[in-house]
Length: 167
Ligand SMILES: [Zn+2]
Image: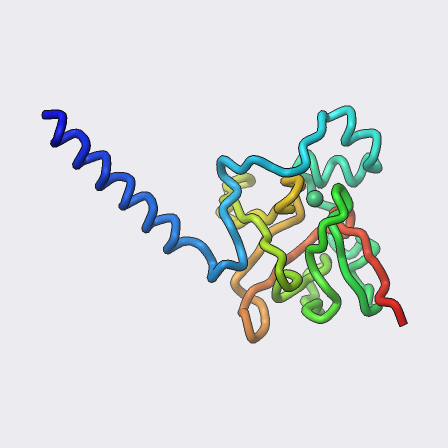
């Protein structure tokens, strides 16, 4: 009986493991479930360092109104970091004109692993994207982006801070 139990346990473990691997996206993304974040702050600490709009979006999974964010039509060369923890998330190299009203990128910055989670709010099934260091809500990723990835990382401007490339 004991042996049967361990065999079943082993099979479940293997199945779960292969399932996780199949759903990960070529190493560019990682599932957010059960994540322990490197940067952990209390709600009060976040409120102190973020503007009310940044707090609403990053920490409460809010969304800015389309075409209102400061980086929607932003075309300068540089890096977009997390407004909560300054982790490099995207660069101007993969930013494209999506027309959706939010800054859009077809890939994360090199060496950056954006976290993904399933979002079933508002009667839709979407893939939420989060900062890998602090778990801040960034936006969503969709499968209707341009080549070479076919992905559209749709990000709230309020989740980002822009660092201009040095001349
Ligand atoms: Zn962050």
